[in-house]
Amino acid sequence: MNVPSSRPAPALDESAFPEDAVEVGRVLGAWGIKGGLKVKPFSADPQALFSTKRWFLQPSEAKPGQQVPRLLRVVQARDQGDAVVATVQEVDDRDVAQALAGARVFVARTSFPTPDEDEFYWVDLIGLNVVNRDAQPLGEVVGLIETGPHCVLRIQPAAADGVSPPEVLVPFVGVYVDKVDIAGKLIHVDWSLDD
Image (cartoon, rainbow, N blue to C red):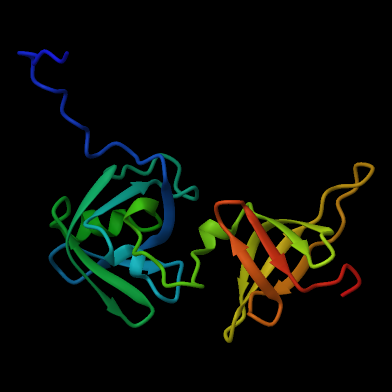
């Protein structure tokens, strides 16, 4: 039997860095005269930046000691060419915004928009194992390459005798990709080890 507690529940720290945080862009610098930010998204379709009003920052690796707020509460964000421009509650001064240049922008993976069937986020493909139609393991997805018309899976085969073989590159298109099983952490492809 549950007995109500007279103590209030602990408040959740909304500025806590999410466990499922994914880096989605970098602050380029100030935008406008009132402390707006210009962000370079890592995707041609920056929907992850628009899907939440909470962006998390980490300092740039190139700027040791850079001071950045942990959380930015987005008031407004929109596309502007190859960038996203935004106003945030925590920054209302152009100099402060410019000082954030290079900061890494993260959002919680759970806030990403739900992809359509047969659409996948890169972050969900990295780390999956790849096998071909003959059940031969090709390796693990370590990254993707954007080529314009389509993406290419970068697959690292398992090391043999301490030597890492060269990466296998497989176009991420229906002709070569038979099935993506996110839950099973496996991608099935029509690709020979000799290709």
